[in-house]
Length: 307
Image 1 (cartoon, one colour):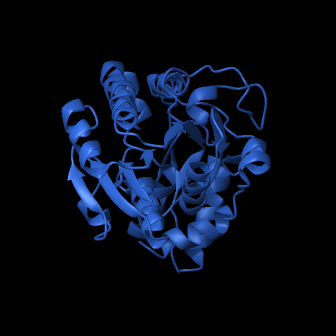
Image 2 (cartoon, rainbow, N blue to C red; image 1 turned 90 degrees about the vertical axis):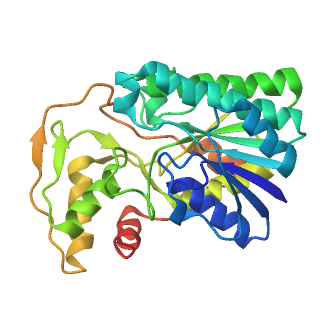
């Protein structure tokens, strides 16, 4: 199958590209390299260095590749940046998504898998695990822009017949996540562990997240592309783990490698961050045939082995 992955030089995107190529697909990658890394690129993929907001450029790439399946992962993912500059966040996450949707429709793509967010959409939910049907109440512009992109995906399905689905991820971690980045506490704290630096916890450490390993997320993308499911699908582990609990798990994984993690520094909460996050993945299990396979302890061991 001819596939195109936006954001394919990024953390999740590059892992997805590898899986697509491994199963024999022809893959094109579109990435601006603002946060993606050239070293993540699979040599078997055709690479286009381009911003998804460049509508004419995106149209030209689609005209050349003519992908049957499109995986849209290019995004602005920093919650704090979205709070500081919501217009930029919307420019990338909403207008960029529309640019990709329009090109997919114009060039006959059969299926588009959109990357969305779970915790970023539900806000401080009152139901845990939180299903896709729960009210949407983002606490940051990032979640709002992702909701808008989901809406445009569904609109393009109703209006133009473009088959789309949106995967609402939990907190994804794994190999190639930037240990010096602004997003991804697992990678950041793993980098602290390996480099012997003291981690900083924002808040009291009792806030929870639903951590899901990137190979599980990749598998969900492959299944979603081959399915006829529409609308949003939660993709998480379905388990709630506190930041302090995660630190304990990371410390245990590090000890197996002779590494020790310093006690964290606690700092004030940051705006836009949810208190609890845990996704109900029943729809993914029952309708998509997907469920998480990598436990947090095993995922941390795998991640540390790559650092």
